[in-house]
Length: 280
Image (cartoon, rainbow, N blue to C red):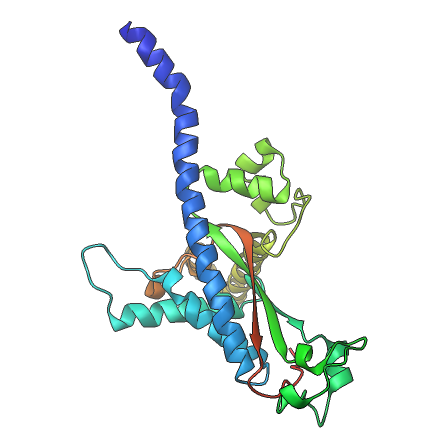
């Protein structure tokens, strides 16, 4: 009986671990999605107060996403330095086009051109203006700022992260679990998205940066036999330093590498200032 129980436990264990790890990862995703919903509203609100300026919108989103990057132990209280680090990380993440995409869905360029008056859409006395709707909609509709934020959320729970990523981008299970999709130049993803190439681009950047440093070291030490051993040591150290610099930022306690999938949120806010089409 004892042996039978052990066999049954071993049969059930993989499924049980998958369920537990899946619950944990989806809980983290749900938390991030709720935070992104709030951050999108804050970004839209800040954009409504600044004429739809994209930099202001991104700054608003970044400020509200900062709690996602707080790194504090359970036995200590958050310090101002922890808040500053989280704010820096969120700013880097949101302003990076490889990890976040912010789009203004309304007003569109056509709507802006229809209601443009001296470089902006007027928003004064809207209750007294005509509500007639043409191809570009009414001026009241044009004063509704709607934005969409897509953010590459990092999956951190082992095994389940690769499984979810594979389901998201359409990888074959074996290739996904083997990590083939993260090798530079690999194009196995069928459903590519904002996040599917981020690791590939970072790997390519690491390789290019390391190659640049090594070439300069070799050029500086070429022709001198006494530097041959030192050159090899320096090039190896340079490669390790470049890899460490790309894989982690110790001062911020932040590891940007990882398996990521896109999460999306939208928010609509009435303009509080005249909307001016941003160049971004």
